[in-house]
Amino acid sequence: MQTRGNPRLPIDVMLEIMDVSPTPTVATLMKTCRKLYHEGPKRIFAECPHIEDSPGDALLRSFCLFLLAEHGTRFPYLRKIRFDMVAQEEDVVAMLYDCIKKMTHLEVLIFDVDLDALLDCHPKYAAAFSDLRTIKHLEVAAGGPDCFDMLKNMRSQLVNVELQMWDTTNTRDLTLEQDLNPVTLLEHSSGTLERLECERWYPIRFHSGNPRYPAMRRLTLDNESVPSRAALVQVYPNLTHLYFRWVDFEIPVDEDSWEVMLSEAFEANSATPSSLSWTELEEVRGTTGIIWALALRCRVRRLDLSNVRNHGDRVMLSSLLRRTHPTHLGLATAGAFFDEEIEDSMKQIFSQEAASGLRSLDLRLDFDPDDLLEISEYMEYVQYTVTQLQLEELSLHISGTHFAQYDQHDPNIVRPFGASGVYLWDLDLRALANVFMDRMPTLKKIRANVDTTVRIEFPVELNDILITRTSAGAERCVVMGKEDRGS
Image (cartoon, rainbow, N blue to C red; front, side, top):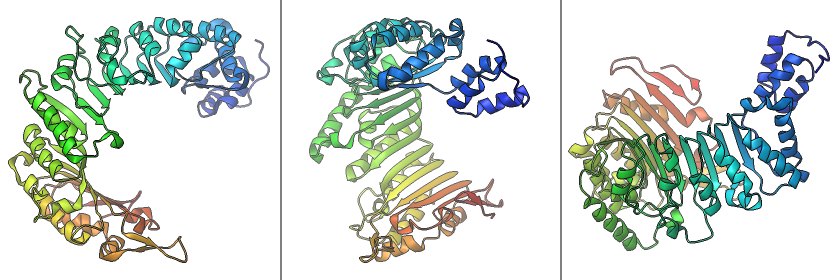
Protein backbone atom coordinates (compact mmCIF):
# COMPACT_ATOMS: atom_id res chain seq x y z
CA MET A 1 0.00 0.00 0.00
CA GLN A 2 1.34 3.40 -0.96
CA THR A 3 1.27 6.23 1.55
CA ARG A 4 -1.72 8.41 0.78
CA GLY A 5 -0.50 11.38 2.72
CA ASN A 6 1.42 12.38 5.79
CA PRO A 7 -0.44 13.00 9.05
CA ARG A 8 -0.29 16.59 10.13
CA LEU A 9 0.40 15.58 13.73
CA PRO A 10 3.44 13.61 14.89
CA ILE A 11 2.95 9.85 14.56
CA ASP A 12 3.15 9.27 18.31
CA VAL A 13 0.31 11.75 18.83
CA MET A 14 -1.74 10.03 16.14
CA LEU A 15 -1.20 6.68 17.87
CA GLU A 16 -2.44 8.15 21.15
CA ILE A 17 -5.52 9.44 19.35
CA MET A 18 -6.06 5.94 17.98
CA ASP A 19 -5.88 4.52 21.50
CA VAL A 20 -8.97 6.46 22.58
CA SER A 21 -10.93 6.44 19.33
CA PRO A 22 -13.91 4.25 18.35
CA THR A 23 -13.46 1.61 15.67
CA PRO A 24 -14.85 3.74 12.74
CA THR A 25 -12.38 6.51 13.56
CA VAL A 26 -9.48 4.06 13.79
CA ALA A 27 -10.49 2.62 10.42
CA THR A 28 -10.43 6.11 8.92
CA LEU A 29 -7.04 6.93 10.42
CA MET A 30 -5.67 3.67 9.01
CA LYS A 31 -6.10 5.16 5.52
CA THR A 32 -3.80 8.10 6.19
CA CYS A 33 -0.37 6.40 6.26
CA ARG A 34 1.32 3.01 6.29
CA LYS A 35 2.32 3.22 9.96
CA LEU A 36 -1.26 3.82 11.11
CA TYR A 37 -2.51 1.19 8.66
CA HIS A 38 -0.46 -1.48 10.41
CA GLU A 39 -1.08 -0.17 13.94
CA GLY A 40 -4.86 0.09 13.51
CA PRO A 41 -5.71 -3.61 14.01
CA LYS A 42 -3.98 -3.62 17.40
CA ARG A 43 -6.31 -0.83 18.55
CA ILE A 44 -9.41 -2.33 16.96
CA PHE A 45 -8.85 -5.68 18.66
CA ALA A 46 -7.85 -4.15 21.99
CA GLU A 47 -11.54 -4.25 22.92
CA CYS A 48 -13.45 -7.51 22.61
CA PRO A 49 -15.10 -7.59 19.15
CA HIS A 50 -18.83 -8.31 19.51
CA ILE A 51 -20.18 -10.18 16.48
CA GLU A 52 -23.97 -9.97 16.25
CA ASP A 53 -26.61 -10.93 13.72
CA SER A 54 -26.99 -8.29 11.00
CA PRO A 55 -28.87 -8.04 7.70
CA GLY A 56 -27.12 -10.16 5.10
CA ASP A 57 -24.43 -11.03 7.67
CA ALA A 58 -22.83 -7.68 6.84
CA LEU A 59 -21.10 -7.28 10.19
CA LEU A 60 -19.65 -10.79 10.24
CA ARG A 61 -18.63 -10.56 6.60
CA SER A 62 -16.73 -7.30 7.17
CA PHE A 63 -15.08 -8.74 10.27
CA CYS A 64 -13.85 -11.82 8.42
CA LEU A 65 -12.57 -9.83 5.44
CA PHE A 66 -10.71 -7.46 7.77
CA LEU A 67 -9.09 -10.41 9.58
CA LEU A 68 -8.10 -12.24 6.40
CA ALA A 69 -6.51 -9.13 4.81
CA GLU A 70 -2.75 -8.65 4.72
CA HIS A 71 -2.18 -12.41 4.39
CA GLY A 72 -3.51 -13.15 7.86
CA THR A 73 -1.00 -10.98 9.71
CA ARG A 74 -3.79 -9.49 11.86
CA PHE A 75 -4.78 -12.71 13.61
CA PRO A 76 -2.12 -12.46 16.36
CA TYR A 77 -3.76 -9.22 17.56
CA LEU A 78 -7.11 -10.95 18.14
CA ARG A 79 -7.02 -12.13 21.75
CA LYS A 80 -10.73 -12.06 22.62
CA ILE A 81 -14.05 -12.33 20.80
CA ARG A 82 -17.79 -12.43 21.63
CA PHE A 83 -20.30 -14.22 19.38
CA ASP A 84 -24.02 -13.46 19.40
CA MET A 85 -25.39 -14.90 16.15
CA VAL A 86 -26.83 -18.21 14.94
CA ALA A 87 -27.34 -18.86 11.23
CA GLN A 88 -25.20 -17.41 8.45
CA GLU A 89 -25.08 -17.57 4.65
CA GLU A 90 -22.84 -20.26 3.11
CA ASP A 91 -20.07 -17.96 1.91
CA VAL A 92 -19.85 -16.29 5.33
CA VAL A 93 -19.78 -19.70 7.04
CA ALA A 94 -16.77 -20.67 4.95
CA MET A 95 -14.96 -17.43 5.79
CA LEU A 96 -15.68 -17.66 9.52
CA TYR A 97 -14.61 -21.31 9.62
CA ASP A 98 -11.32 -20.31 7.97
CA CYS A 99 -10.93 -17.47 10.46
CA ILE A 100 -11.61 -19.62 13.52
CA LYS A 101 -8.88 -22.08 12.52
CA LYS A 102 -6.41 -19.17 12.29
CA MET A 103 -7.27 -17.64 15.69
CA THR A 104 -4.09 -19.15 17.13
CA HIS A 105 -3.64 -16.40 19.74
CA LEU A 106 -7.22 -16.22 20.99
CA GLU A 107 -7.45 -16.24 24.80
CA VAL A 108 -11.05 -15.17 25.56
CA LEU A 109 -14.01 -16.88 23.84
CA ILE A 110 -17.55 -15.79 24.73
CA PHE A 111 -20.86 -17.11 23.40
CA ASP A 112 -23.82 -14.88 24.28
CA VAL A 113 -26.03 -17.11 22.17
CA ASP A 114 -27.38 -20.63 22.72
CA LEU A 115 -24.29 -22.53 21.59
CA ASP A 116 -26.33 -25.60 20.64
CA ALA A 117 -28.39 -23.49 18.25
CA LEU A 118 -25.23 -22.17 16.58
CA LEU A 119 -23.61 -25.62 16.31
CA ASP A 120 -26.85 -27.16 15.08
CA CYS A 121 -26.84 -24.75 12.13
CA HIS A 122 -23.11 -25.05 11.50
CA PRO A 123 -21.69 -28.28 13.04
CA LYS A 124 -18.17 -27.79 11.68
CA TYR A 125 -17.64 -24.76 13.93
CA ALA A 126 -17.41 -27.17 16.88
CA ALA A 127 -14.28 -28.87 15.56
CA ALA A 128 -12.69 -25.53 14.70
CA PHE A 129 -13.27 -24.13 18.19
CA SER A 130 -12.17 -27.38 19.83
CA ASP A 131 -8.87 -27.40 17.95
CA LEU A 132 -7.83 -24.00 19.33
CA ARG A 133 -5.09 -24.37 21.95
CA THR A 134 -4.71 -20.91 23.47
CA ILE A 135 -8.13 -20.18 25.02
CA LYS A 136 -7.98 -19.44 28.75
CA HIS A 137 -11.38 -17.86 29.42
CA LEU A 138 -14.61 -19.44 28.12
CA GLU A 139 -18.20 -18.23 28.62
CA VAL A 140 -21.27 -20.08 27.35
CA ALA A 141 -24.66 -18.43 27.89
CA ALA A 142 -26.57 -21.66 27.18
CA GLY A 143 -25.49 -25.13 26.22
CA GLY A 144 -26.72 -28.68 25.73
CA PRO A 145 -25.40 -31.88 24.13
CA ASP A 146 -23.64 -30.22 21.17
CA CYS A 147 -21.96 -27.75 23.52
CA PHE A 148 -20.93 -30.58 25.83
CA ASP A 149 -19.37 -32.53 22.96
CA MET A 150 -17.37 -29.47 21.98
CA LEU A 151 -16.23 -28.95 25.57
CA LYS A 152 -15.04 -32.56 25.89
CA ASN A 153 -12.92 -32.24 22.75
CA MET A 154 -11.30 -28.88 23.49
CA ARG A 155 -7.52 -28.79 23.35
CA SER A 156 -7.10 -25.50 25.17
CA GLN A 157 -6.01 -25.51 28.80
CA LEU A 158 -8.81 -23.44 30.27
CA VAL A 159 -8.34 -21.25 33.35
CA ASN A 160 -11.76 -19.56 33.76
CA VAL A 161 -15.10 -21.04 32.67
CA GLU A 162 -18.66 -19.67 32.94
CA LEU A 163 -21.23 -22.22 31.85
CA GLN A 164 -25.01 -22.36 31.85
CA MET A 165 -26.12 -25.95 31.44
CA TRP A 166 -29.46 -25.60 29.68
CA ASP A 167 -31.04 -28.40 27.74
CA THR A 168 -34.42 -29.50 26.41
CA THR A 169 -34.23 -32.70 28.43
CA ASN A 170 -34.52 -32.89 32.20
CA THR A 171 -31.53 -30.97 33.53
CA ARG A 172 -31.42 -33.03 36.69
CA ASP A 173 -30.92 -36.22 34.65
CA LEU A 174 -27.88 -34.75 32.95
CA THR A 175 -25.80 -34.88 36.12
CA LEU A 176 -26.38 -38.60 36.50
CA GLU A 177 -24.49 -39.23 33.28
CA GLN A 178 -20.74 -39.33 33.75
CA ASP A 179 -19.94 -37.27 30.67
CA LEU A 180 -22.51 -34.55 31.28
CA ASN A 181 -21.16 -32.52 34.17
CA PRO A 182 -18.33 -29.97 34.28
CA VAL A 183 -16.06 -32.32 36.21
CA THR A 184 -15.75 -34.69 33.27
CA LEU A 185 -16.45 -32.22 30.49
CA LEU A 186 -13.47 -30.08 31.50
CA GLU A 187 -11.09 -32.92 32.35
CA HIS A 188 -8.65 -31.72 29.70
CA SER A 189 -8.14 -28.61 31.87
CA SER A 190 -7.99 -30.36 35.26
CA GLY A 191 -4.47 -29.08 35.83
CA THR A 192 -5.14 -25.44 34.88
CA LEU A 193 -8.77 -24.60 35.74
CA GLU A 194 -8.87 -21.99 38.52
CA ARG A 195 -12.41 -20.63 38.35
CA LEU A 196 -15.74 -22.23 37.43
CA GLU A 197 -19.10 -20.49 37.45
CA CYS A 198 -21.83 -22.97 36.62
CA GLU A 199 -25.58 -22.50 36.37
CA ARG A 200 -28.07 -25.39 36.46
CA TRP A 201 -25.57 -28.00 37.58
CA TYR A 202 -26.56 -30.24 40.48
CA PRO A 203 -23.42 -31.85 41.96
CA ILE A 204 -25.25 -34.33 44.20
CA ARG A 205 -22.74 -37.07 43.52
CA PHE A 206 -19.75 -37.78 41.30
CA HIS A 207 -18.73 -41.03 39.71
CA SER A 208 -15.69 -42.83 41.09
CA GLY A 209 -12.47 -42.03 39.33
CA ASN A 210 -13.40 -38.45 38.52
CA PRO A 211 -10.45 -36.14 37.88
CA ARG A 212 -9.16 -33.77 40.54
CA TYR A 213 -8.69 -30.07 39.94
CA PRO A 214 -5.77 -29.00 42.15
CA ALA A 215 -5.59 -25.49 40.65
CA MET A 216 -9.28 -24.70 41.21
CA ARG A 217 -9.75 -21.80 43.61
CA ARG A 218 -13.19 -20.25 42.89
CA LEU A 219 -16.42 -22.18 42.41
CA THR A 220 -19.86 -20.62 41.86
CA LEU A 221 -22.99 -22.79 41.75
CA ASP A 222 -26.47 -21.60 40.81
CA ASN A 223 -29.19 -24.11 41.64
CA GLU A 224 -31.75 -25.07 44.25
CA SER A 225 -30.12 -28.24 45.57
CA VAL A 226 -27.62 -28.64 48.38
CA PRO A 227 -24.47 -30.21 46.94
CA SER A 228 -22.45 -32.98 48.52
CA ARG A 229 -19.57 -31.42 50.40
CA ALA A 230 -17.54 -34.63 50.18
CA ALA A 231 -17.96 -34.72 46.40
CA LEU A 232 -16.82 -31.12 46.06
CA VAL A 233 -13.82 -31.63 48.32
CA GLN A 234 -12.71 -34.71 46.40
CA VAL A 235 -12.77 -32.90 43.07
CA TYR A 236 -11.70 -29.42 44.23
CA PRO A 237 -9.38 -30.07 47.20
CA ASN A 238 -7.68 -26.65 47.15
CA LEU A 239 -10.76 -24.45 46.83
CA THR A 240 -10.55 -21.02 48.47
CA HIS A 241 -13.78 -19.27 47.36
CA LEU A 242 -17.20 -20.93 47.29
CA TYR A 243 -20.24 -18.99 46.09
CA PHE A 244 -23.89 -20.02 45.90
CA ARG A 245 -26.55 -18.23 43.92
CA TRP A 246 -30.19 -18.87 44.60
CA VAL A 247 -33.35 -18.24 42.62
CA ASP A 248 -36.05 -17.13 45.05
CA PHE A 249 -38.95 -18.70 43.20
CA GLU A 250 -37.32 -22.12 43.59
CA ILE A 251 -37.34 -21.94 47.39
CA PRO A 252 -40.10 -24.21 48.76
CA VAL A 253 -43.15 -22.14 49.70
CA ASP A 254 -43.80 -24.39 52.68
CA GLU A 255 -41.37 -23.39 55.45
CA ASP A 256 -41.51 -26.86 56.99
CA SER A 257 -40.52 -28.50 53.70
CA TRP A 258 -37.65 -26.04 53.39
CA GLU A 259 -36.34 -26.86 56.87
CA VAL A 260 -36.71 -30.62 56.29
CA MET A 261 -34.72 -30.40 53.04
CA LEU A 262 -31.93 -28.44 54.72
CA SER A 263 -31.86 -30.70 57.78
CA GLU A 264 -31.59 -33.83 55.66
CA ALA A 265 -28.75 -32.31 53.64
CA PHE A 266 -26.98 -31.18 56.82
CA GLU A 267 -27.19 -34.67 58.31
CA ALA A 268 -25.90 -36.26 55.10
CA ASN A 269 -22.97 -33.87 54.87
CA SER A 270 -22.24 -34.20 58.60
CA ALA A 271 -21.99 -37.98 58.22
CA THR A 272 -19.08 -37.75 55.78
CA PRO A 273 -15.56 -38.41 57.15
CA SER A 274 -13.78 -35.41 58.63
CA SER A 275 -10.99 -35.95 56.11
CA LEU A 276 -13.39 -34.93 53.34
CA SER A 277 -13.35 -31.27 54.27
CA TRP A 278 -11.33 -28.23 53.39
CA THR A 279 -8.97 -26.96 56.08
CA GLU A 280 -9.67 -23.30 55.33
CA LEU A 281 -11.71 -21.23 52.89
CA GLU A 282 -11.03 -17.59 52.14
CA GLU A 283 -14.64 -16.71 51.32
CA VAL A 284 -18.06 -18.38 51.31
CA ARG A 285 -21.09 -16.50 50.04
CA GLY A 286 -24.74 -17.41 49.57
CA THR A 287 -28.05 -18.23 51.23
CA THR A 288 -27.79 -19.00 54.95
CA GLY A 289 -29.60 -22.34 54.73
CA ILE A 290 -27.54 -23.70 51.83
CA ILE A 291 -24.22 -22.82 53.46
CA TRP A 292 -25.36 -24.27 56.80
CA ALA A 293 -26.51 -27.50 55.10
CA LEU A 294 -22.97 -28.05 53.77
CA ALA A 295 -21.94 -28.77 57.38
CA LEU A 296 -18.59 -27.04 56.91
CA ARG A 297 -15.84 -28.03 59.33
CA CYS A 298 -13.21 -25.48 58.48
CA ARG A 299 -12.19 -21.90 59.08
CA VAL A 300 -13.89 -19.41 56.73
CA ARG A 301 -12.23 -16.02 56.76
CA ARG A 302 -15.04 -14.17 54.97
CA LEU A 303 -18.61 -15.37 55.45
CA ASP A 304 -21.31 -13.49 53.52
CA LEU A 305 -24.92 -14.53 54.07
CA SER A 306 -27.46 -13.13 51.63
CA ASN A 307 -30.56 -13.50 53.79
CA VAL A 308 -31.26 -14.05 57.49
CA ARG A 309 -35.02 -13.75 57.46
CA ASN A 310 -36.47 -15.77 60.36
CA HIS A 311 -35.77 -17.61 63.59
CA GLY A 312 -34.47 -20.69 61.77
CA ASP A 313 -31.95 -18.59 59.86
CA ARG A 314 -30.71 -17.04 63.10
CA VAL A 315 -30.18 -20.50 64.60
CA MET A 316 -28.23 -21.54 61.51
CA LEU A 317 -26.19 -18.31 61.66
CA SER A 318 -25.23 -19.08 65.23
CA SER A 319 -24.19 -22.60 64.20
CA LEU A 320 -22.18 -21.29 61.24
CA LEU A 321 -20.22 -18.91 63.45
CA ARG A 322 -19.28 -21.78 65.76
CA ARG A 323 -18.23 -24.00 62.87
CA THR A 324 -16.34 -21.47 60.74
CA HIS A 325 -14.99 -18.74 63.09
CA PRO A 326 -14.91 -15.98 60.44
CA THR A 327 -13.00 -12.71 60.72
CA HIS A 328 -15.44 -11.01 58.33
CA LEU A 329 -19.22 -11.40 58.35
CA GLY A 330 -21.59 -9.99 55.76
CA LEU A 331 -25.23 -10.11 56.79
CA ALA A 332 -28.48 -9.14 55.09
CA THR A 333 -31.09 -9.20 57.82
CA ALA A 334 -33.95 -7.40 59.53
CA GLY A 335 -33.11 -4.62 61.96
CA ALA A 336 -35.86 -6.02 64.20
CA PHE A 337 -33.71 -9.09 64.91
CA PHE A 338 -31.48 -6.95 67.15
CA ASP A 339 -34.37 -6.63 69.63
CA GLU A 340 -33.14 -8.13 72.92
CA GLU A 341 -36.60 -9.45 73.74
CA ILE A 342 -36.83 -11.94 70.86
CA GLU A 343 -35.51 -15.49 70.93
CA ASP A 344 -32.02 -15.96 69.51
CA SER A 345 -31.54 -12.24 68.98
CA MET A 346 -28.49 -10.85 67.26
CA LYS A 347 -27.22 -9.75 70.64
CA GLN A 348 -27.18 -13.36 71.82
CA ILE A 349 -25.55 -14.54 68.60
CA PHE A 350 -22.80 -11.93 68.70
CA SER A 351 -22.18 -12.51 72.38
CA GLN A 352 -20.99 -16.09 71.86
CA GLU A 353 -17.30 -16.93 71.84
CA ALA A 354 -17.38 -17.83 68.13
CA ALA A 355 -18.05 -14.18 67.26
CA SER A 356 -15.11 -12.85 69.24
CA GLY A 357 -12.80 -13.17 66.25
CA LEU A 358 -14.87 -10.89 64.04
CA ARG A 359 -12.86 -7.91 62.84
CA SER A 360 -15.05 -6.79 59.95
CA LEU A 361 -18.85 -6.60 59.80
CA ASP A 362 -21.05 -5.66 56.84
CA LEU A 363 -24.68 -5.19 57.94
CA ARG A 364 -27.45 -4.72 55.38
CA LEU A 365 -30.46 -3.83 57.53
CA ASP A 366 -34.05 -3.80 56.34
CA PHE A 367 -37.03 -2.48 58.28
CA ASP A 368 -40.76 -3.05 57.91
CA PRO A 369 -43.82 -1.05 59.02
CA ASP A 370 -45.15 -4.21 60.72
CA ASP A 371 -42.20 -4.27 63.13
CA LEU A 372 -43.20 -3.87 66.78
CA LEU A 373 -40.84 -0.96 67.44
CA GLU A 374 -39.75 2.14 65.57
CA ILE A 375 -36.50 2.17 63.59
CA SER A 376 -34.90 4.55 66.10
CA GLU A 377 -35.34 1.96 68.87
CA TYR A 378 -33.95 -0.86 66.77
CA MET A 379 -30.93 1.24 65.84
CA GLU A 380 -30.17 1.68 69.55
CA TYR A 381 -30.17 -2.12 69.86
CA VAL A 382 -27.87 -2.33 66.83
CA GLN A 383 -25.44 0.13 68.41
CA TYR A 384 -25.43 -1.70 71.72
CA THR A 385 -24.87 -5.10 70.08
CA VAL A 386 -22.23 -4.09 67.53
CA THR A 387 -20.16 -1.96 69.89
CA GLN A 388 -19.47 -5.04 72.02
CA LEU A 389 -17.39 -6.49 69.19
CA GLN A 390 -13.70 -5.81 68.58
CA LEU A 391 -14.20 -4.62 65.03
CA GLU A 392 -11.73 -2.79 62.84
CA GLU A 393 -14.13 -2.22 59.95
CA LEU A 394 -17.90 -1.71 59.94
CA SER A 395 -20.39 -1.12 57.12
CA LEU A 396 -24.02 -0.16 57.74
CA HIS A 397 -26.50 -0.18 54.87
CA ILE A 398 -29.94 0.96 56.03
CA SER A 399 -33.00 0.30 53.89
CA GLY A 400 -36.46 1.63 54.62
CA THR A 401 -38.33 1.68 51.35
CA HIS A 402 -41.70 1.22 53.08
CA PHE A 403 -41.61 4.43 55.08
CA ALA A 404 -42.48 6.89 52.33
CA GLN A 405 -45.81 8.11 51.06
CA TYR A 406 -46.53 10.09 47.91
CA ASP A 407 -48.60 13.25 47.87
CA GLN A 408 -52.10 12.58 46.57
CA HIS A 409 -52.06 15.70 44.39
CA ASP A 410 -48.44 15.60 43.25
CA PRO A 411 -46.79 12.14 42.93
CA ASN A 412 -43.39 13.82 42.62
CA ILE A 413 -43.58 14.87 46.26
CA VAL A 414 -42.50 12.23 48.80
CA ARG A 415 -43.15 12.57 52.51
CA PRO A 416 -42.00 10.40 55.43
CA PHE A 417 -44.50 7.85 56.75
CA GLY A 418 -44.84 7.47 60.52
CA ALA A 419 -42.21 7.99 63.21
CA SER A 420 -39.78 5.63 61.45
CA GLY A 421 -40.12 7.61 58.22
CA VAL A 422 -39.37 10.83 60.09
CA TYR A 423 -36.34 9.16 61.69
CA LEU A 424 -34.96 8.17 58.27
CA TRP A 425 -35.68 11.65 56.93
CA ASP A 426 -33.80 13.33 59.78
CA LEU A 427 -31.02 10.72 60.10
CA ASP A 428 -27.59 12.35 60.35
CA LEU A 429 -25.23 9.68 59.01
CA ARG A 430 -22.15 11.56 60.17
CA ALA A 431 -23.41 11.68 63.74
CA LEU A 432 -24.44 8.01 63.59
CA ALA A 433 -21.04 6.93 62.31
CA ASN A 434 -19.24 8.98 64.96
CA VAL A 435 -21.25 7.24 67.70
CA PHE A 436 -19.74 3.93 66.63
CA MET A 437 -16.28 5.48 66.37
CA ASP A 438 -16.60 6.94 69.88
CA ARG A 439 -17.73 3.65 71.43
CA MET A 440 -15.35 1.32 69.57
CA PRO A 441 -11.66 2.14 70.13
CA THR A 442 -10.57 -0.65 67.76
CA LEU A 443 -12.63 0.70 64.84
CA LYS A 444 -10.53 2.15 62.02
CA LYS A 445 -13.09 2.40 59.25
CA ILE A 446 -16.86 2.83 59.09
CA ARG A 447 -19.09 3.16 56.05
CA ALA A 448 -22.78 4.06 56.41
CA ASN A 449 -25.45 4.73 53.81
CA VAL A 450 -29.22 5.00 53.54
CA ASP A 451 -31.30 3.58 50.71
CA THR A 452 -34.87 4.78 51.03
CA THR A 453 -37.45 6.59 48.93
CA VAL A 454 -37.89 9.07 51.78
CA ARG A 455 -34.46 10.59 51.02
CA ILE A 456 -34.59 10.21 47.25
CA GLU A 457 -34.19 13.95 46.68
CA PHE A 458 -31.32 14.33 49.16
CA PRO A 459 -27.84 15.11 47.76
CA VAL A 460 -25.71 11.95 47.47
CA GLU A 461 -23.28 13.18 50.12
CA LEU A 462 -26.05 13.12 52.73
CA ASN A 463 -26.87 9.47 52.05
CA ASP A 464 -23.37 8.02 52.18
CA ILE A 465 -20.42 8.55 54.50
CA LEU A 466 -17.00 7.03 55.07
CA ILE A 467 -14.89 7.74 58.16
CA THR A 468 -11.38 6.38 58.66
CA ARG A 469 -8.65 6.74 61.27
CA THR A 470 -5.36 5.01 62.03
CA SER A 471 -5.97 4.59 65.77
CA ALA A 472 -8.46 5.47 68.52
CA GLY A 473 -6.97 8.90 69.21
CA ALA A 474 -6.02 9.78 65.64
CA GLU A 475 -7.71 12.41 63.50
CA ARG A 476 -10.73 11.17 61.60
CA CYS A 477 -10.94 11.53 57.82
CA VAL A 478 -14.52 12.02 56.69
CA VAL A 479 -15.70 11.48 53.13
CA MET A 480 -19.37 12.18 52.41
CA GLY A 481 -20.63 11.00 49.06
CA LYS A 482 -17.82 11.68 46.61
CA GLU A 483 -16.54 14.82 48.28
CA ASP A 484 -13.93 14.95 51.02
CA ARG A 485 -15.45 17.18 53.72
CA GLY A 486 -12.59 17.02 56.21
CA SER A 487 -12.89 15.85 59.79
